[in-house]
Image (cartoon, rainbow, N blue to C red):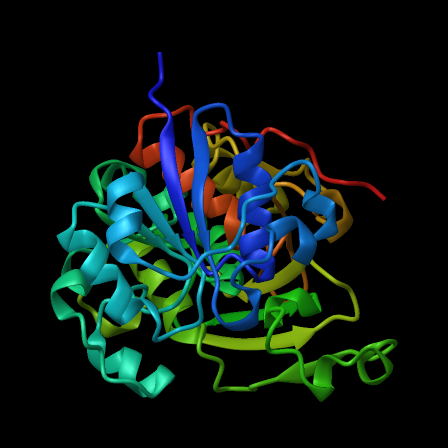
Length: 357
């Protein structure tokens, strides 16, 4: 019989927070014990901020208090912007609380790289040293015993899952990788909506942003480096050109990834590489040969769908993945990590199919 895992949710008033509350409400072995917020949201019910949660999760939002979380919770999930967990996570770890951080603070193992891309000094080097990158398909065994899990970013999840099998098999040239990803506007977060995501500005539009400078670039490279076995030779260390785009939809990510093969592959051979790598994975669906993913098929679920095709004219491998940026790209993956950390069935609370249409 499973012991109920008690969860403290720090930063419950955003989109990832609301999805975490929804998923935990239906989880058979976990319970949302505390949900925190700041400012005028303190004292409000989660269900007043998110009407979809009425009668499902009516917890009152409280101010953040690490001592109270430590006294009542087994794990804290931090759903705040980058920089916020640098102070909070070490305090929770010192009090014996395991942590899943949905921000970027513990994803990049190199503190200098974190400063370069996020503009902040990393003030928690000891915690960073022990953090585990929370992509179960690559790091499941380490996640089981982790005290601090860095939940991957939404774009990196889609890109790494699409490319990792080929990189792991040394089937592609490491410096040839190009990733074009398109995301729904919920990826910007509820509190950060500006003119660019204002409905009249964005409806009917499709644009690239942060070209050649997106913060998820080094995270994608690090994830692929892990898949490659961390080779020392520079020519084998993945180098990625990544471009993010904003779709005029609420949620979902579609990533189209290109790479030159080490030697010519057929469609069947490329498909076999994917299928073998993910044969036992509960949330990665390799589509039948000739079929390609669509975000409508995964939205509302923790699935990542992947399809592949070899361009017979250029020889390039094209691999396409689709995920819900708020679920497999954030909150769903956090619950998947929680399940692994606390010995629950990995699929617990995540069995739902996508919402279609």
